[in-house]
Length: 243
Image 1: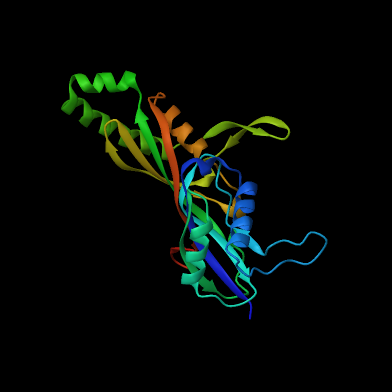
Image 2: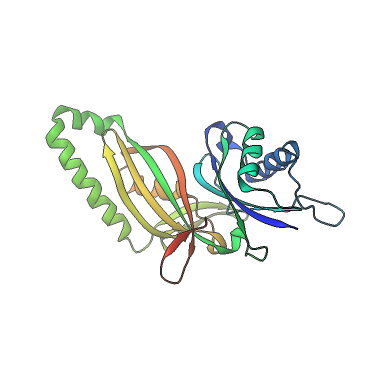
């Protein structure tokens, strides 16, 4: 009997620089090496029946990616997880697997929100002024960061240049931003939590949001890392994780 399995995995290290297409090829080879009985599509170009969630932008890590695999026969999710993890390259790891109804909607269709952790570092010019009178200046800087974040969220629009097939055009990214908060600040590192719309509504690259936030703060920060830490579906009253 066929079985549809939804898998949650993480992506970290150098493999964050491979494209979504190459990632699909990596999983296809891994499934073959692990001898997983995946259903193969019909037609002139038969392929494994696997489908991914919204693509992860190049260079961004994740602790919350999803993949659906349609199997020819039933396999315990614990066994599937173990066999795949033995064959996956460094930087990819299965975190959880769950059997779902065969008629379940695709990940791309149901996922509509994503959350990210943006790690920034204070530039030297600002860090020098903080170091001179550390306690007092740090307190002022924390207050200024909080004010800047509120100011950013209250902007009527956040426009930036975006490269398209027809050239460069100005795009307002504000409608895609649901929330951004200061998660933690321990000089010189600042962490922001970001929640944006994603999926069929479009896939806003969080790097654009980070750059816009920094430019609203006199370009006093550098981006160190961006990590996607959640993908969500919209319930009747709450946002719930896919698994």
